[in-house]
Image 1 (cartoon, helix red, strand yellow):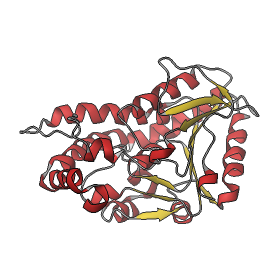
Image 2: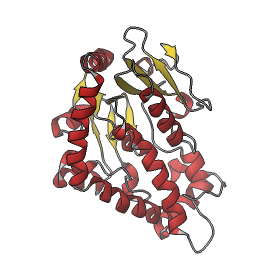
Image 3: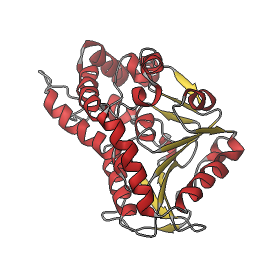
Length: 289
């Protein structure tokens, strides 16, 4: 059943993006051309985030916003999961030197911040999009995958799917910083101080996501919401979204993102983070966890 929940990355009418996308697809819905679908398309890696994924999300969102006929954007995943977070093979286990996994000493925090902030801003294109965005989560929307999903205006999960940010235990800080603004301080701390995962039912009851449904009803629930929004004039959608976003930003969301993005770099280069990465390189991520 879990594999069957994966979205078809090629369903609908392809929307041209230049340069072409390599980690995801962008299509206009055949049944309702007012809906565009961005589909993570690395199912062999649980749609894990590569160095290219953040920028491709932004470019896909921007391209969908250029099409007047499109009113709503659905973000979904092919294969067994929505998104399993950053690709540990690239960001943790490999020998590739990267701004976010520096081996040289001393560590350059501003190089790390500049790169991770760019990734964060790419994810936030879903938040800034004039067209409402809906995340469709099956099985896993975890770690960096939760960062992305929570940038969307609405999140619909299947009941048994999992969401959370496990790297807060040793090797990460969620850079998009939506947890407090969606859950409030008590439950945000409950998630971030444990790194626990919760299922769709709990996420919906806590107010982290808008809806949780049985697996067999996931597509119907997402399509029902997308079609309902798509029937509203695009200008009306844009104005209502701007009002709510402005309130969250005035409460401090963007300032929180500055802090979390700095702290994320620290967690990857402090003694515990360096041990975790080096142990993963030798023994593999599963052994390190």
